[in-house]
Image 1 (cartoon, helix red, strand yellow):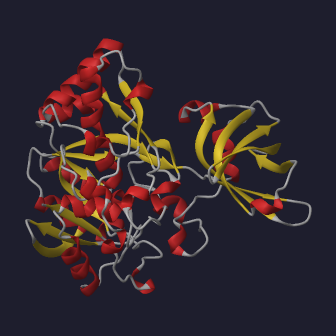
Image 2 (spheres, helix red, strand yellow):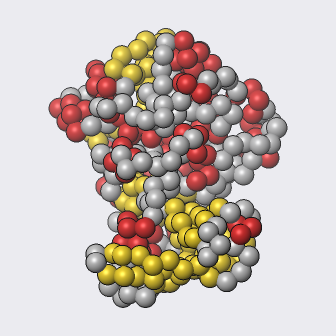
Image 3 (tube, one colour):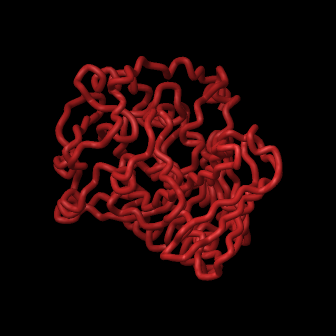
Length: 405
């Protein structure tokens, strides 16, 4: 673990010209370029050809999270705009329950223009389904760089989901350096998004269309879904010189029992679509160790700590870990496992479940680049140099890659 903690983030830097950052997606999602990295060799194709590079009988896993319109703007009488960016539900702390509330919720929020919101509440009148609703925000205690914000409204017919849909703004990535447009409401969601809760899209999935999904199925590739609600921390730069000084953000995951069973049918091996699916799947191994050792653990005890993989003795096989989760779920009558992960995947990490990965091209000096480097045994520079030389588009709305180490 010492070697991993002492990785210098500056070793994971590259020059990314502004013009190579895709500000908007292509008109047709699956027409993006596809870089194929297989056992050290690189070629390129188009995303619709992805199934050609996969084998019948493989298991592909997607993150079905849906991006919420998490930015709320209030205006003070002075004209000052206060932005409340909902990060994580506090009361109720379950996403689905929170969205169903009809008069009050509390969220952990980042607050833009905080210095202009010294005290008091903020109010805004909304029109939802032809009804006027007054939304009130009350700032609570500070938690690191964020605050608790309580939100109240005066209509029992309106849910918090209704308020976000009517009043919220989709939070596109900051590095796009532009305002959210109406088109982003569709293009910044995957075609298979279902479970509301993310403040950023699982962007590797943005390339998939019904056409590509149908081709994958026809080729005999099993498709399964997990849920990881992507937090704003995914954009958090590594500011420490060594990665041991970087605190990974916590993200919430849900995995169905049927997905665990499907993984076991495939000997605990999968193709992950996106780094969020990677982090979910790889976290399962360490959850399996926990429940194998403590079958009575509650779901909070299953949280995967940042450095847990590097302290683990890897004492059981991947299939044994998955069998332990299945046994735990059956014992407790659980159909869906809900917990959280703070896992950091960096060179020195040994992958347990993910054997192939579909992913976009990530920011310099990011934890996502560390994750990719760990997967391709340190060969990330060749991949990124090729992409830069051959006209690939980068970041959330950019092109894609299939990595096979």
